[in-house]
Image 1 (cartoon, rainbow, N blue to C red):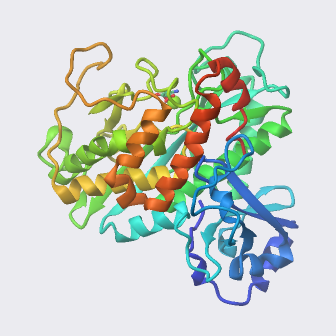
Image 2: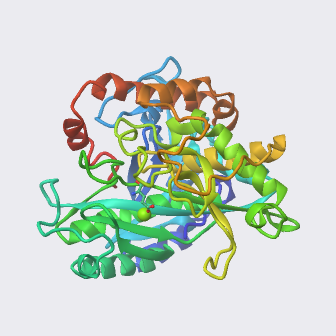
Length: 447
Ligand code: GLU
Ligand code: MG
């Protein structure tokens, strides 16, 4: 797991870190930031320049935040050709991600060294530090293995969760576990998923920033290990039109001085009043934050009823069609109770998605929102009076821009940036056939 140090907490002499990494064979060190379109971008230095990567940071123009998924730039009045930002990493966060290569998650800073308003990682760090609660986040990553030409990886029929489909990839899965061990990534579980060539890995719960760092690290390792086996990996929400999608579900648990908020209370399934208010806050904020959770040009085709993507704005115990699935504290849940936000997909910037999730839960607690009625059955096709999600990408962006909560949690510059890159996607892809768009964006979020 990644340690997520704020940049200021590093002693000036970095030579001990350089020596230690050199001793592990590291020559090249990368530091990454995630942009508003959810793409991980990086700069690299020779390992001896690690102290400079920490102290001064490596340059990135403000437009880095609004690069688009297809190699363009969605300039805004405040994000244009003028100015410079610095990517700063902490030497203790460096992990070995390939032979000779180290990587660390970066903070996007202004030239004075302070976090930029566009730094999702700093926004998330601030929210978690000010929460007054202990939060743990566990991410699930779904992805799709591809052949080298970007098509389907296997030619045989697929068996969801099949022992054959996993064991046919056992060399890759074993290499993934070895890579995770070397990089300090906590993988809890892995399996072949429902859609053809789909894999899922579940990551160990961690503090919010570390959990989002781990998502980026896991994607890098999956990309490297797939390449070693002559394959590519897609993190597109819908890699192939008409097939199952990739989610990026997030589990959240919260505790105060009295203990967990999601268990030990006298509400439904042991929820405490504050735990119920957290669920209410997440659901209340969901339509306005969908543009952050699942805002890309290939997000809405995944978010359809029947896809287990949580396309209905409701909650329920172990309900896989509800936007919020409550996992209660039972012997079958070793980490205790959590709530799973299922709408999130891998096109989301993980720092912003976790910030939105945590921020909306805290908002519900602050406002003392009452827990809505549980939906105990399948909401799909049922005659229920529930709030609805924005119907397409354009509507999700409009709702994001109009959401006071989004601006309060993420800040106006981030909302402006997300809207700019996603509106570029609407303008470019909304009128194209889905098959063409899924093909064009299949590798957009691959690390
Ligand atoms: N693949 C589904 C999604 O797009 C999730 C399936 C599951 O419940 O794991 O969210
Ligand atoms: Mg899954």
